[in-house]
Length: 419
Image 1 (cartoon, one colour):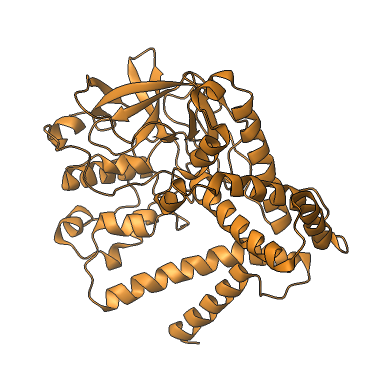
Image 2 (image 1 turned 60 degrees about the horizontal axis):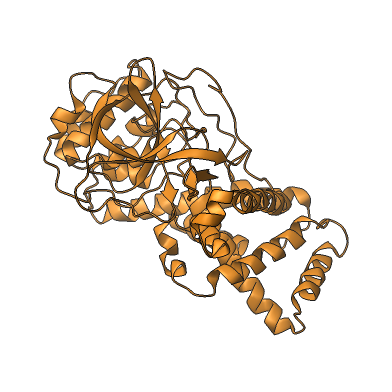
């Protein structure tokens, strides 16, 4: 079979899997269709996009390739960079990767790549992909260096290049002389108070230890669901815990006059794809109904005869829905809202700050970590102070509802070192 035929077939199967028209009866087939098959077909689609752009003589930079193809798995972690040499078409990257060596420690390769890209872009935007609080495959990386080999990339990404203000400090000055450290300016705005017990849909990848980590070094979070039934159950459990945390935190109830609205906007706010929902008047109310529907599916045995019908009838009775057309419209709307939460909150925990503000934070966040702005970037970050050496560990990017992504006006920035 030639590639084009293979791609068209996989694209058709992916559409069937997404729309529910794929006829499956065996639990093994359901598991395959929901997990590995869909994921692999998305990969095929990405490969085909890159292939067509290469045919059109598009000149890829190293930064562009790493962003487009992040998360592709490889036997050797070095191939998260070396594996794409054949499609990189800019002279600077060619010179940087002129002599690839698998003998070079992968930690050194990833750190060297991060430093090179920051110098090339004269930008700190790359650290939006970094943070020791997110799952990593490679241990003992500096916290500000992205793990290019990690299959999990739930980090916030607002802008690949540029920042909220023009940088008046050269990247050479910020990178300094120490290979595994970087100087940045921060403004601490919040302190983490309460956290969920587990994150949403983190895959089976463990969080590799950071060089300054003293506990929970190889902690693994909840595995990603393998079946549709697992998906309903995990998401329902996560949302129930998140809602309970918000409702039972006094400072949070005082902070937000309309708590259900603030709760929903916190869950969807970490993705630019959901921007249109942030201003829709009925979205929060519709989401409460979507949560009820999800709970109906999560609390019945869908594998039993009539399980799905039982869940739908329970939902219709509790919400006064009598017509099938009304039910179909509600199902469509609920699916879209749950997908919006999935896009924004996957790989994160809901947290409340000491002020009462709600936030989506990396799974490795701990109580008393700080939320801060990093100058010349575009989103807030969670950081952890390393008391013995007066330096900071980057935990990862986050979203805090009720504050902007960058401070306005004059700011008293504090110069610190990220390790």
